[in-house]
Length: 144
Ligand code: RB5
Image (spheres, rainbow, N blue to C red):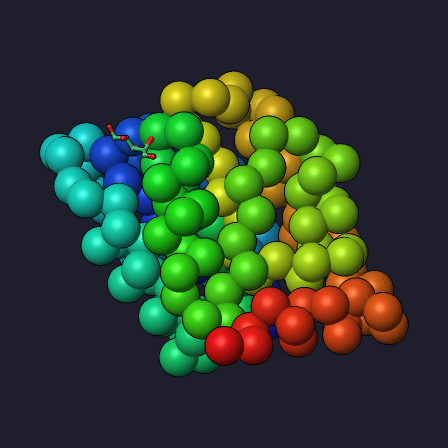
């Protein structure tokens, strides 16, 4: 059975989202949470909605994109239980999973090239959370 991954973008990340959807849909079940065109939308709204779908259990991992990745990252991290990591390189993407157990990978559609994006996504998907001391640390993130 294919692993299920959510995918969301605003208009600024739409082109790269579509590329990632095509690239990864061979090996993964991709749940496309929109958007479906380059028409302007508000990233807080679309990203939050996708994060709530993750929290509901529809998929355990989400890739979120906007133009820079910054807005999507801020929006995602305001949802309790979301650990969103904005990554521009493979090492950070790997560590985001190993140490931070990031459940949302954020990419900047106007920042990253397609090939690098694919490599970043692969690193994040292939890495495993190390737990141990990192488990306690991520639990501390959700204290009110
Ligand atoms: C949209 O123009 C742009 O502001 C958005 O995609 C994102 O980069 C915000 O952080």
